Image (cartoon, rainbow, N blue to C red; front, side, top):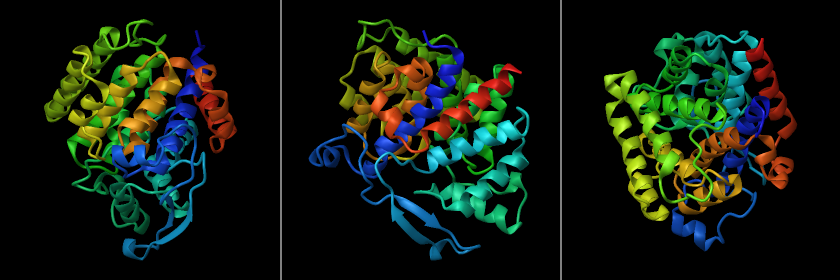
Length: 342
């Protein structure tokens, strides 16, 4: 069984691997992914690139070079930024510091950026608003969920973890579903780190088992956190029911949805992670090949949860070697773990 430190590394590196695997297919329908030969390994971008955003004119943004095989998108950029913020603040989540990191992300060239995060960063960069006024009021995407892994890893106290997960989302996204999605993924990762809790027994894939209990527990936490999160919790309960009833995977994914909307992407991602808990590679390939839509973010969430379950050695060697900045990601995870250990 992987050590706790190796689960930290597996989580951040797994999220980056998932992001990079999904990146070439972002926005594609499942049928298009199949027509393109499906996903078996890292591939070059078919449209994803970095973006240079002028001081305040989003419409005048300049597109950079297309991303290469193994490179990742804004989901991993912001995950690393969030981890660095926690490390620099000595283990505290400080919204002002996080807002500064978001502005820095914008200045350095975001990749396929989430529009709500860009809009918040633009306001913060111009000094027009404080951190608690910057969020896009209609921001409802899965962006905050796809970057929340460091909070799920770091905070052992449930109250602190849940507060930080929601608060980091509120800096950029104003809708409850985006905040509930971040909370759900933070809880999933905390559960995965805790001795791989939530992982189903080998040989029981497709029978529900502990995977359904994993989704049930997350739904209960989310639903109990705020009345505004009730509808999102019901989406998680739907994912649990589909898994428990052993509905065919492709059908279940179609029911849950694969758009960037947090109410679709996050339950879909957690379902995919719970559906194939014993094989990191199988979980990610199934996710990319059967979803489409917001596949980079969905796969990033699956990779983070599965990486926390399996630890570093559970990640295929070719993906560990081929993903962008693997050494830096692993070092960031180890520094985060060392800080938590005190």
